[in-house]
Image (cartoon, rainbow, N blue to C red; front, side):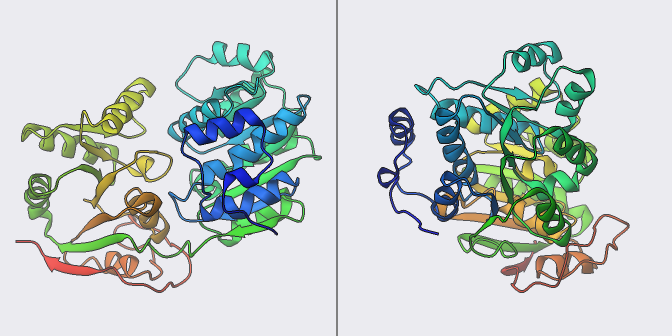
Length: 387
């Protein structure tokens, strides 16, 4: 499949070309260069790439081209989280200015009636989370019979979150004759099986290794005891400049850690699934704008937040799998920039050591970690003992 080196090489609608130029989309990222030409030719796509590589543009640009050519069809974009849905909707709105294309966002935590009205008005595209879209299907306020273009983004995360039954039901409502673009950061057997059932002779767009961390991330592991973790996290807040994203294991630990950081005068916000949609939006806006340079979050922030220039990711608690670790530290060093990842490793945490080294985790450690797939290569960079 032919690739391209500059967006001026593509025969895009003039309003879209102007929008891309204004958004500084000139040269494509590797995943865009591979996926867009195939998608423009109507092929199904099975795409894999590390986080922060421009996957949204890889499907948004061909989708808008197809919608501008055929107004009788509708596009459906399914994503795992509200935050990712909001970001994709914003990108689509910006790119589609002047095309006469309008979309809607269908997620939990927002007005069901407003969503029903916009679905009834036949939006050109729908960006949705599976759970809320299922609510509309069950209430009869959504009709997917005109969907000609389907995007399944962050599929591995959707399966991790237990959305497989909802995906199956939604797929039953979508016409068989359609173009499907599936993107995932990892490709375990269950996703390969799903792709085999949902895609028709797809073009395989794979960029780099999705099993290794980005080379632009400097990884440092600190060996800290449980009693010393709070002392060390405050030291990191004092010594590091720029935006810092801190991951904790649970909502309770996230709230508690944020209170500690705030009590020492550091501007911090909280992001986890227990917050209201308004609170989550406000936290992201403050973090994105720089009003609060520190965000403390659960794995909800591991994917689906588009915040540029996060200089540091700190794993106060290590994640449960290698995949989650890669996603977490992929929040820094985006689009070729440099970044830092700091991991707190407690004494005796053998699963944590193996996970950082890229090995399979057995699921020990009190049930806090789960299997992350086959053995992988790689190292976890520098290790030092916190003092």
